[in-house]
Length: 225
Ligand code: HEM
Image 1 (cartoon, helix red, strand yellow):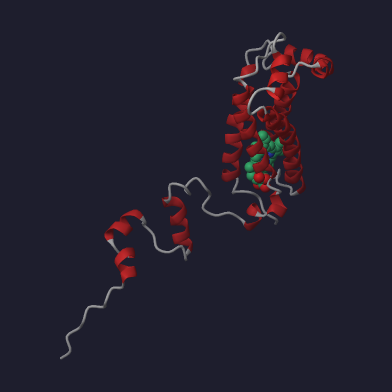
Image 2 (cartoon, rainbow, N blue to C red):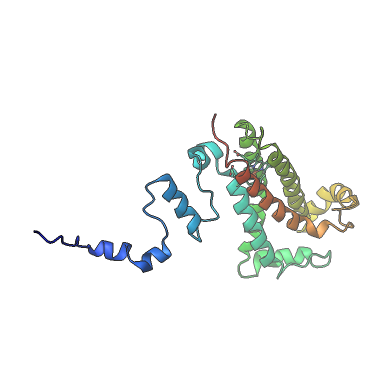
């Protein structure tokens, strides 16, 4: 009688079926729905991402990536803004000369240009994002709450942009915004004299987080019906 022989294990099996490999990767190849889900859930770098996305959600022709572009530009503004704070003093005595120095003398004076152009681009991007959301009807239930979060983000973006307009303290800034700044400063909460004015950037950060969270909770980015 023939003695049954043990099937030979290949070098591939030696690695992929080893206890070490299985202790790290707890799922098979991502060739089934279940395994694809497990890949996303069990990977530290991927677990923040949604398990599934609609094709339209990653299609440039659908989203225009304007929400992502707005977020990217917001990050650019925060980073360049912090760097500029090392050189720029927001007082009538120094503001104008500090801006001149930033432009002419300071190494990496390009930061100021990035900050300025980034602000313009963010305002354009946020409008385009809102326009896209409107065109695709993505404000409809269940996304109506996120549309409202978006409206607040739009107002805060414009407000931040307006505060930046003043900073160079040149003739344009002074005369073009005298009326507007008086109105803004009179606002009881977020105005210059109110307790909330330093909080605007902070509030934007929180609302962007809420906005992204809602995109996930509302079933991901909308898709064509
Ligand atoms: C700082 C401003 C904003 C940022 C960073 C932002 C970011 C994003 C991102 C990354 C998405 C994912 C889809 C995409 O990229 O198109 C999104 C979706 C969405 N946003 Fe915004 N957004 C902002 C302002 C607004 C405004 C002004 C509105 C409308 C008034 C709005 C309404 C929405 C809605 C309803 C969705 C879900 C769209 C869908 O499921 O197709 N957002 N946002």
